[in-house]
Image (cartoon, rainbow, N blue to C red; front, side):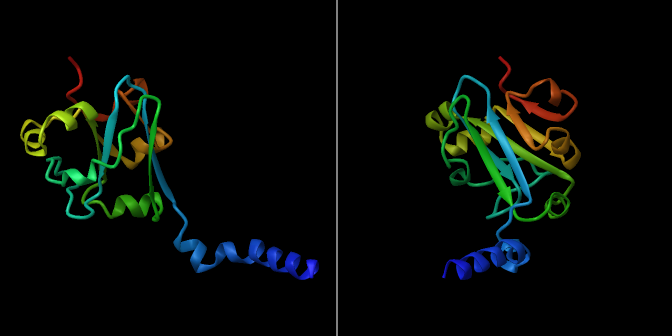
Length: 159
């Protein structure tokens, strides 16, 4: 019996990683957003899903529910996983740029979504190309560091 179980397990390990089930459930693009600030933040990737917007449209016409997924505490991280490979993922975007929005948890608690939209009350919006993300090893930091100084960044968090 142990031999049969061993052979079946060996078969799964050797042959099934190429099976459709594994292929369908594999993530090829992972973007990590690190909160290195001293405040709680919310993040949103504008990939034109569920009625959202995508670059070059950088307005806040997506719904608030897509931002309210949970605050990232200082030192925390958001992970966004996508099935297609990087090139295919970016090929599905209206342009070669991905917008990443960072919101203050305090702002979301104090103001209505309509006020936030009207005042464009985001801490930072990163407009990153595939090359930008590859240069960052798909690790995006808030607040932006020196490695991001040449990248397209809209900042509303500088007082």
